[in-house]
Image 1 (spheres, helix red, strand yellow):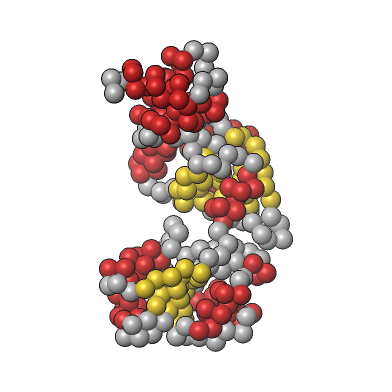
Image 2 (cartoon, rainbow, N blue to C red; image 1 turned 90 degrees about the vertical axis):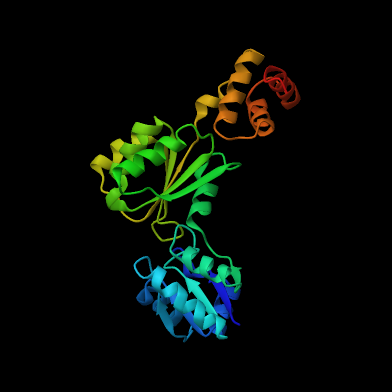
Amino acid sequence: MGILYIVGTPIGNLGDMTFRAVETLKSVDFICAEDTRVTAKLLNHFEIKKPLVSYHEHNARRESARIAERIMNGENAAIVTDAGMPCISDPGELLVRECADRDITVTVVPGATAAMSAAAVSGLPTRHIAFHGFLPTDKKERRAQLAAVKNSTDTLVFYEAPHKLSATLGDLLTFLGDRRVSLCRELTKLHEEIFRTTLSEAAAYYKDNEPRGEFVLVIEGNAELYENADSIESALEQVKGLADNGMRPADACREIAKVTRFSKGELYTAYLEENGK
């Protein structure tokens, strides 16, 4: 039985291709690619000559079984995307699931990732990050997802295409309120730009300026839950707010302790007493 390799590729700068990624692509029997034309350019640059299999969102369900069969018959395969890590907000996850269900070995060759690169350079808190990929195009689904994350204190990360950016910024402002945001454009490329601003200012700016290039939006979490508390009662309200949104009480106490004068132990003891535990 063969192996499936998940291989990260550069998100814009070919210098970010790792030695291990090159060696892996040279060693496999075939490569599954989102756009074979894009991957062919990458392979030519590194003088890699391997058969390419077209694998994308429109054929993923059909091709996953076929690719898995080839691997079970002894071939080694790699999966790549046009840029960055495959299988993250990407149809490659279906192939990984198919291989996992068949007990095929899947191994990862890490590479550049736009989401984490943008978070690192955003200037916003990175202790807790929630990655949401592209928002749904269906209005009802989009509203539901934005409503679901409205009260999250995690830093939020979204992808967006330039032609949808203005509408998305308007939706984010409507549902999340005005927050700090870092718009990371064309990461690692010649015209890389990090625009640190607020959602309202970004929405206004891109009404008059045409967006260019692919964007990663890094948005601060719900800061209202972190407002300083003058009394332990008001601090506990913030703890309960986090706990009601799914955070473990102990973790909620630790987070609120960072921004109030009360310790985690004081808050947790008071929380247990108030909730009869």
